Length: 310
Ligand code: SF4
Image (tube, rainbow, N blue to C red; front, side, top):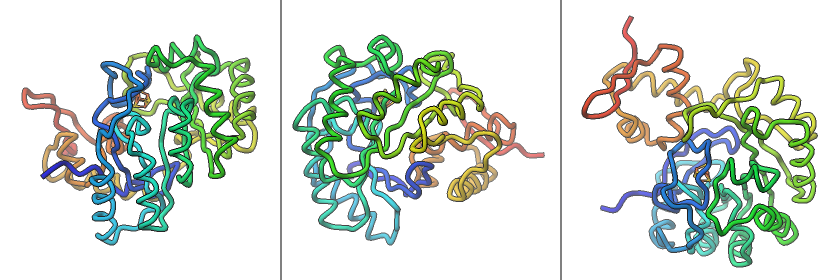
């Protein structure tokens, strides 16, 4: 049986309960971001292919929905860049014909400089592009794009998309202390956000291990200052200043602790056991490991996590 491409619904700070759909195999991506939480991209590319065909994706989504799950959104994303899947336009249209649940696309935004990709995303309800750099130099440093992607062209692609698209655009900026967090940077980000007429600006930062060491989270005061400079559309989407995680996250955390108190598990075991994507599990696992509530054992068979017994 071929691998299912649907996972969740998982609780998401940006999207409530989100049913995730993986449109590309692991690390097929146009970027190799220094902050990537799933590892390095061996060879960033803009080549589009039907990495997972529309029939397979739509069948898996409908099968999952028939199991009486009720997500807030169906989110096309994956372990890389979903717009590299050349069937994405057909996938969006066919899912929308089958359900009223809004369809979102979690993209790094790089492919929106191409007319065909902008046209294919028109049917989505919400598009969530990343925009982590406000200059070409910063773009190369943070996103390490495929050499065929230039900063200005990428950014103008997003501006052009806004002109053509009637749905919601929620931009994410991943903030890295000392790299894209100065007032000068924030003014430049604001220039681009205004031109893109982003409906929302989500400020994210490192909360778990990244592709490169030394990716530092800005102080909470800095996050708040940047949010205030960007105006009403901006919100911080990581926990800050003791703010409580949303209720959906508490359920995953409880299930995780309950599972690991019964037996040691690898990350893959946990993801299978909780029917939740590995990236999502990492969000909850890391704070528990840092607080000492969960112990880590590295063996020849892999890395195991286990509830600490007191
Ligand atoms: S765009 Fe996303 S998947 Fe690709 S390298 Fe950056 S963070 Fe990782």
